[in-house]
Length: 476
Image 1 (tube, rainbow, N blue to C red):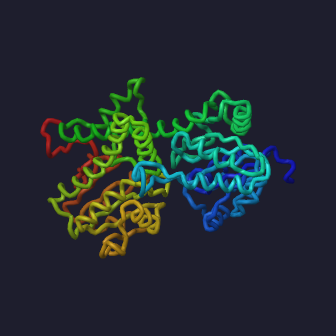
Image 2: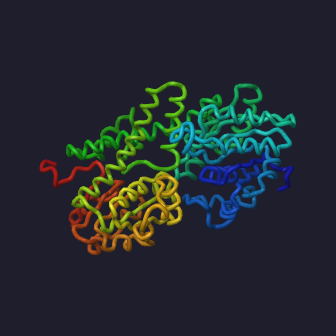
């Protein structure tokens, strides 16, 4: 199709976990719209143009293959694609600041500002600029200021269109979303821009599921949504500790509580803790915003969600050591699952990393198996988040082995830990694994996906999150 025949032309700045899948689905659902994803990284763009995509997401490759070179393109020619676009999405990383004011809590929006400056510099026509990145409330004000300083007399309308994707189910979340949220200035120009973006999503999303708000409500809604979800996880995890102390079963508690329609069943599964790129980052961002506006009690309330998650991860590590006779020094520990959740290779803030860190401190020999996580990605995140690398940690490479098979990881191990809820772990041959392990053979199920009674009959000593230990209670 010639350039003149497209209904709209979209450019997305950022070819990561959000930009790539989102644009692939837009291209699939809107064949008359030209979509191009741009990025500074040639390696990233080359991967998107191959059959080995840079991220793992069920169903993503099929969607990309359907649209690629038809109306979906991936390019490093950022200037050209911005210049020809009607709508430019900003979908870049907004990491938590590590230094300076607000370090450890505030989001660093440097990349968003750089995108705005690039758009203002190369654009030759009016454009709609869409914040897709998760940003602090009122970031659009900064983006608008930068764009308005162009010397070409161009007009830009800034919209907020936060993503509500869950890794592992992103394609389903995009093709059948609960809602699409679009925030814009409540001016004639802002409302018109919002309706333009509404028309894109309306190609497949029912109109009553496309919500339009002012800019600030849209920006804040994403932070609040993730804070509420993480709050539920930390709430049930706090109860899991009480269950283990009293003989109650957290799964039974979750079922009983979740049957109340006012509460609901979702996000009430106790575990070793939450991870991923969003929950902790967004809550800490919310904490910092509250502090900035002098709402200290609100900040303390939301900060406790993160504190409880840290407690849960550390509690899991301490239980491993305590149950294994208070020492794991020199013992082989098999870690099954390293990604922060199943059906993704994402290791950002994964609970497994913190358990491995704690076991390294105890001088354990660790063997990791995950079907989608590379050793390179594991070390990159370990260095970035925990500051652990081979230069500052003696024998790090020798202390952590990555296996290509779960049975190899468990062979000769004193304990195995389930840290990601991959479905394949439910159907492993645990009799075979038990025979290959050192005795007594321990299982620490950090995701509550295994049948504890069956494992105990095989001979394992099993410890699950929020489940009573039959050795500790005689009246279960």
